[in-house]
Image 1: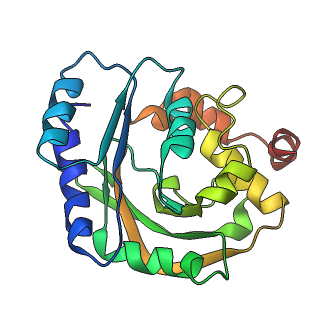
Image 2 (image 1 turned 90 degrees about the horizontal axis):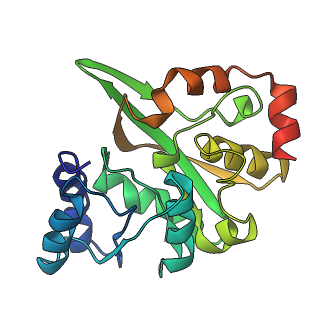
Length: 211
């Protein structure tokens, strides 16, 4: 994703000038498209905090590694072709930092060519469909560790939705934040036809997988 990375990394830069202490950890799966060379350069320039590049078993395996490697109290996962909305980060972190909640969700803007669609959180639909975007989901690291992260073995593509359902079934309180937390671009792995079929499974089957 070397063509997307500069845009993603640039979106994080304003956070370094905020009141938050930010760590931008990049976990790469031993890419061979020029991403690694670019990321090493970005690291030398101070544009990212830390870089790990090694073979892995897929997206959610990499995200699980990040859970264990991250030093921050709150984690949010941004894919290479996503952009974080810096102004939303403090308000998304606030409910967790206050101690009242262990995770918070906000809206995300989906971009498909010239089309724009705002995806707002719908926790009440958790057993029926993906209730929000993981790019707009802020979790305490301790919660993610307690939930054993993402089930990358059973859900090599939809493990984020599975985690959302496990949190819902476990009755973990969720803060809904009225903000747009991220922009993400359609056309990634989760937009493939087999994933669309995966999302159309009945809520009963989803619940069985989650439990």
